[in-house]
Image 1 (cartoon, rainbow, N blue to C red):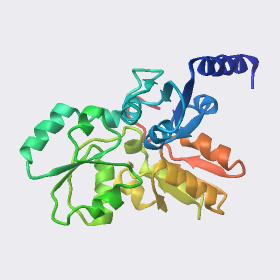
Image 2: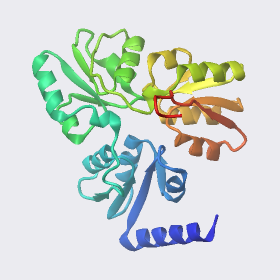
Image 3: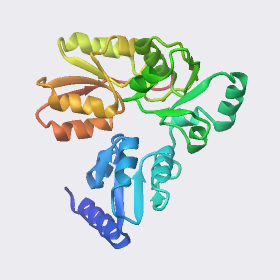
Length: 265
Protein backbone atom coordinates (compact mmCIF):
# COMPACT_ATOMS: atom_id res chain seq x y z
CA UNK A 1 0.00 0.00 0.00
CA UNK A 2 1.47 3.35 -1.04
CA UNK A 3 2.01 6.18 1.44
CA UNK A 4 -0.66 8.47 -0.03
CA UNK A 5 -3.28 5.73 0.26
CA UNK A 6 -2.30 5.06 3.87
CA UNK A 7 -2.68 8.76 4.63
CA UNK A 8 -6.19 8.84 3.12
CA UNK A 9 -7.21 5.78 5.12
CA UNK A 10 -5.81 7.25 8.34
CA UNK A 11 -7.64 10.56 7.81
CA UNK A 12 -10.94 8.88 6.97
CA UNK A 13 -10.75 6.48 9.91
CA UNK A 14 -9.75 9.29 12.28
CA UNK A 15 -12.65 11.47 11.15
CA UNK A 16 -15.05 8.53 11.53
CA UNK A 17 -13.90 7.99 15.12
CA UNK A 18 -14.19 11.71 15.86
CA UNK A 19 -17.74 11.87 14.50
CA UNK A 20 -18.79 8.46 15.90
CA UNK A 21 -19.50 7.31 12.37
CA UNK A 22 -19.58 3.82 10.89
CA UNK A 23 -18.76 3.19 7.22
CA UNK A 24 -20.78 0.69 5.18
CA UNK A 25 -19.89 -0.38 1.63
CA UNK A 26 -21.91 -2.39 -0.85
CA UNK A 27 -20.27 -5.38 -2.52
CA UNK A 28 -20.38 -3.49 -5.83
CA UNK A 29 -18.29 -0.50 -4.74
CA UNK A 30 -14.68 -0.14 -5.82
CA UNK A 31 -12.08 -2.25 -3.95
CA UNK A 32 -10.47 0.77 -2.25
CA UNK A 33 -13.85 1.67 -0.75
CA UNK A 34 -14.48 -1.87 0.45
CA UNK A 35 -11.02 -1.92 2.04
CA UNK A 36 -11.82 1.00 4.32
CA UNK A 37 -15.38 0.03 5.25
CA UNK A 38 -16.35 -1.27 8.67
CA UNK A 39 -19.03 -3.48 7.11
CA UNK A 40 -19.42 -4.89 3.58
CA UNK A 41 -22.55 -6.54 2.24
CA UNK A 42 -25.66 -6.22 0.11
CA UNK A 43 -28.06 -3.33 0.60
CA UNK A 44 -30.60 -4.87 2.97
CA UNK A 45 -28.00 -6.70 5.08
CA UNK A 46 -26.10 -3.44 5.55
CA UNK A 47 -29.28 -1.59 6.54
CA UNK A 48 -30.07 -4.34 9.05
CA UNK A 49 -26.50 -4.21 10.39
CA UNK A 50 -26.88 -0.45 10.82
CA UNK A 51 -29.67 -1.02 13.35
CA UNK A 52 -27.21 -2.90 15.56
CA UNK A 53 -24.30 -0.46 15.67
CA UNK A 54 -23.75 2.26 18.25
CA UNK A 55 -23.08 5.27 16.05
CA UNK A 56 -24.41 8.76 15.47
CA UNK A 57 -23.64 8.77 11.75
CA UNK A 58 -24.03 5.99 9.19
CA UNK A 59 -22.02 6.43 5.99
CA UNK A 60 -23.56 4.32 3.23
CA UNK A 61 -21.17 3.88 0.31
CA UNK A 62 -23.62 2.85 -2.36
CA UNK A 63 -26.41 4.21 -4.49
CA UNK A 64 -29.23 6.48 -3.37
CA UNK A 65 -31.91 3.89 -2.62
CA UNK A 66 -29.49 2.07 -0.29
CA UNK A 67 -29.17 5.16 1.84
CA UNK A 68 -32.96 5.51 1.89
CA UNK A 69 -33.39 1.90 2.99
CA UNK A 70 -30.88 2.42 5.79
CA UNK A 71 -32.72 5.56 6.91
CA UNK A 72 -36.05 3.70 6.93
CA UNK A 73 -34.62 1.13 9.34
CA UNK A 74 -32.62 3.71 11.34
CA UNK A 75 -34.88 6.80 11.49
CA UNK A 76 -33.08 8.28 14.51
CA UNK A 77 -29.61 8.20 12.97
CA UNK A 78 -28.02 10.50 10.42
CA UNK A 79 -27.37 8.65 7.15
CA UNK A 80 -24.85 10.08 4.72
CA UNK A 81 -24.23 9.08 1.09
CA UNK A 82 -20.77 10.16 -0.13
CA UNK A 83 -22.02 10.73 -3.67
CA UNK A 84 -25.58 12.01 -4.00
CA UNK A 85 -25.36 11.47 -7.76
CA UNK A 86 -24.74 7.74 -7.33
CA UNK A 87 -27.90 6.35 -8.86
CA UNK A 88 -29.22 2.93 -9.78
CA UNK A 89 -30.51 2.37 -13.31
CA UNK A 90 -32.96 -0.23 -12.02
CA UNK A 91 -34.43 2.00 -9.31
CA UNK A 92 -34.55 4.88 -11.79
CA UNK A 93 -36.56 2.76 -14.23
CA UNK A 94 -39.58 2.84 -11.92
CA UNK A 95 -40.82 6.25 -10.84
CA UNK A 96 -43.45 6.44 -8.12
CA UNK A 97 -45.87 8.44 -10.27
CA UNK A 98 -45.62 5.88 -13.07
CA UNK A 99 -46.17 2.97 -10.68
CA UNK A 100 -49.17 4.74 -9.13
CA UNK A 101 -50.71 5.14 -12.60
CA UNK A 102 -49.98 1.49 -13.42
CA UNK A 103 -51.60 0.38 -10.17
CA UNK A 104 -54.68 2.41 -11.04
CA UNK A 105 -54.93 0.48 -14.31
CA UNK A 106 -54.80 -2.83 -12.38
CA UNK A 107 -56.73 -2.18 -9.15
CA UNK A 108 -57.17 -5.90 -8.43
CA UNK A 109 -53.38 -6.50 -8.32
CA UNK A 110 -51.09 -6.37 -5.32
CA UNK A 111 -47.60 -4.92 -5.77
CA UNK A 112 -44.44 -6.87 -4.98
CA UNK A 113 -41.34 -4.70 -5.33
CA UNK A 114 -37.69 -5.57 -5.37
CA UNK A 115 -35.73 -3.82 -2.62
CA UNK A 116 -33.79 -1.97 -5.35
CA UNK A 117 -36.39 0.79 -5.48
CA UNK A 118 -36.83 4.28 -4.10
CA UNK A 119 -38.59 4.94 -0.80
CA UNK A 120 -41.45 6.52 -2.77
CA UNK A 121 -41.97 3.29 -4.72
CA UNK A 122 -41.77 1.21 -1.55
CA UNK A 123 -44.57 3.37 -0.12
CA UNK A 124 -46.80 2.15 -2.96
CA UNK A 125 -45.79 -1.48 -2.43
CA UNK A 126 -47.58 -4.28 -0.58
CA UNK A 127 -44.55 -6.57 -0.22
CA UNK A 128 -40.82 -5.80 -0.58
CA UNK A 129 -38.49 -8.67 -1.51
CA UNK A 130 -34.81 -9.26 -2.12
CA UNK A 131 -33.23 -11.44 -4.78
CA UNK A 132 -32.53 -14.06 -2.11
CA UNK A 133 -36.03 -14.29 -0.63
CA UNK A 134 -38.27 -13.37 -3.59
CA UNK A 135 -39.15 -16.98 -4.48
CA UNK A 136 -39.88 -17.92 -0.87
CA UNK A 137 -42.14 -14.91 -0.33
CA UNK A 138 -43.98 -15.16 -3.66
CA UNK A 139 -44.58 -18.87 -2.97
CA UNK A 140 -46.35 -17.90 0.26
CA UNK A 141 -48.77 -15.47 -1.37
CA UNK A 142 -52.29 -16.75 -2.16
CA UNK A 143 -52.29 -18.94 -5.25
CA UNK A 144 -54.97 -16.82 -6.90
CA UNK A 145 -53.33 -13.48 -6.09
CA UNK A 146 -52.85 -11.14 -9.01
CA UNK A 147 -49.41 -9.60 -8.71
CA UNK A 148 -47.51 -6.71 -10.22
CA UNK A 149 -43.78 -7.35 -9.85
CA UNK A 150 -41.25 -4.60 -10.32
CA UNK A 151 -39.07 -3.05 -11.26
CA UNK A 152 -36.72 -5.75 -12.57
CA UNK A 153 -38.21 -7.61 -15.53
CA UNK A 154 -35.45 -10.23 -15.58
CA UNK A 155 -35.77 -11.05 -11.87
CA UNK A 156 -39.54 -11.15 -12.17
CA UNK A 157 -39.33 -13.45 -15.17
CA UNK A 158 -37.00 -15.76 -13.25
CA UNK A 159 -39.36 -15.82 -10.24
CA UNK A 160 -42.26 -16.60 -12.56
CA UNK A 161 -40.30 -19.53 -13.97
CA UNK A 162 -39.45 -21.06 -10.59
CA UNK A 163 -42.82 -20.45 -8.92
CA UNK A 164 -45.20 -21.15 -11.80
CA UNK A 165 -46.73 -17.69 -11.34
CA UNK A 166 -47.79 -15.34 -14.09
CA UNK A 167 -46.98 -12.04 -12.43
CA UNK A 168 -47.42 -8.84 -14.39
CA UNK A 169 -43.87 -7.55 -14.84
CA UNK A 170 -42.62 -3.99 -14.82
CA UNK A 171 -40.23 -3.44 -17.72
CA UNK A 172 -37.17 -2.25 -15.80
CA UNK A 173 -33.61 -3.54 -15.76
CA UNK A 174 -30.17 -3.14 -14.27
CA UNK A 175 -27.94 -1.78 -17.02
CA UNK A 176 -25.05 -3.96 -15.84
CA UNK A 177 -26.80 -7.31 -15.46
CA UNK A 178 -28.84 -6.90 -18.63
CA UNK A 179 -25.75 -6.35 -20.78
CA UNK A 180 -23.80 -9.54 -20.17
CA UNK A 181 -22.90 -11.16 -23.47
CA UNK A 182 -24.31 -14.64 -24.05
CA UNK A 183 -21.83 -15.14 -26.89
CA UNK A 184 -18.90 -14.26 -24.62
CA UNK A 185 -20.25 -16.48 -21.84
CA UNK A 186 -20.59 -19.49 -24.16
CA UNK A 187 -17.05 -18.85 -25.39
CA UNK A 188 -15.77 -18.79 -21.78
CA UNK A 189 -17.61 -22.04 -21.05
CA UNK A 190 -16.04 -23.67 -24.11
CA UNK A 191 -12.58 -22.45 -23.10
CA UNK A 192 -13.06 -23.55 -19.50
CA UNK A 193 -14.89 -26.90 -19.60
CA UNK A 194 -16.36 -27.98 -16.28
CA UNK A 195 -16.05 -24.55 -14.68
CA UNK A 196 -19.25 -23.45 -12.94
CA UNK A 197 -21.11 -20.34 -14.10
CA UNK A 198 -22.52 -18.23 -11.27
CA UNK A 199 -25.17 -15.66 -12.20
CA UNK A 200 -27.37 -13.11 -10.48
CA UNK A 201 -31.11 -13.44 -11.27
CA UNK A 202 -31.14 -9.86 -12.60
CA UNK A 203 -29.42 -11.29 -15.70
CA UNK A 204 -31.44 -12.03 -18.82
CA UNK A 205 -33.04 -15.45 -19.23
CA UNK A 206 -30.53 -16.76 -21.85
CA UNK A 207 -27.67 -16.09 -19.41
CA UNK A 208 -29.51 -17.83 -16.57
CA UNK A 209 -30.35 -20.77 -18.83
CA UNK A 210 -26.66 -21.68 -19.22
CA UNK A 211 -25.68 -20.93 -15.60
CA UNK A 212 -25.03 -23.55 -12.94
CA UNK A 213 -25.76 -21.45 -9.85
CA UNK A 214 -28.30 -18.60 -9.72
CA UNK A 215 -28.48 -16.50 -6.60
CA UNK A 216 -28.12 -13.20 -4.81
CA UNK A 217 -24.74 -11.55 -4.49
CA UNK A 218 -24.32 -12.97 -0.99
CA UNK A 219 -25.42 -16.43 -2.11
CA UNK A 220 -22.90 -16.43 -4.95
CA UNK A 221 -20.14 -15.31 -2.60
CA UNK A 222 -21.00 -18.02 -0.08
CA UNK A 223 -21.05 -20.64 -2.83
CA UNK A 224 -17.52 -19.77 -3.92
CA UNK A 225 -16.32 -20.02 -0.32
CA UNK A 226 -17.95 -23.40 0.35
CA UNK A 227 -17.34 -25.00 -3.05
CA UNK A 228 -14.25 -27.19 -3.47
CA UNK A 229 -13.92 -25.84 -7.01
CA UNK A 230 -10.99 -23.55 -7.73
CA UNK A 231 -12.31 -21.62 -10.74
CA UNK A 232 -15.61 -19.86 -11.43
CA UNK A 233 -17.18 -17.80 -14.23
CA UNK A 234 -19.05 -14.85 -12.70
CA UNK A 235 -22.04 -13.03 -14.22
CA UNK A 236 -22.78 -10.19 -11.83
CA UNK A 237 -21.37 -6.78 -10.92
CA UNK A 238 -17.57 -6.94 -10.98
CA UNK A 239 -17.24 -5.30 -7.54
CA UNK A 240 -18.03 -8.63 -5.87
CA UNK A 241 -14.85 -10.11 -7.36
CA UNK A 242 -12.82 -8.18 -4.78
CA UNK A 243 -14.60 -9.83 -1.86
CA UNK A 244 -14.55 -13.24 -3.57
CA UNK A 245 -10.81 -12.97 -4.11
CA UNK A 246 -10.23 -11.75 -0.57
CA UNK A 247 -12.26 -14.62 0.87
CA UNK A 248 -10.72 -17.19 -1.49
CA UNK A 249 -7.20 -16.05 -2.44
CA UNK A 250 -6.40 -19.47 -3.92
CA UNK A 251 -9.30 -19.41 -6.38
CA UNK A 252 -9.78 -17.81 -9.80
CA UNK A 253 -12.81 -15.74 -10.79
CA UNK A 254 -13.49 -15.06 -14.46
CA UNK A 255 -15.90 -12.16 -15.16
CA UNK A 256 -18.35 -12.37 -18.05
CA UNK A 257 -17.84 -9.32 -20.31
CA UNK A 258 -20.72 -7.11 -21.42
CA UNK A 259 -22.13 -7.02 -24.91
CA UNK A 260 -20.29 -4.62 -27.19
CA UNK A 261 -22.41 -1.75 -28.43
CA UNK A 262 -21.88 0.51 -31.40
CA UNK A 263 -19.20 3.07 -30.65
CA UNK A 264 -17.68 0.97 -27.89
CA UNK A 265 -14.68 -1.04 -28.87
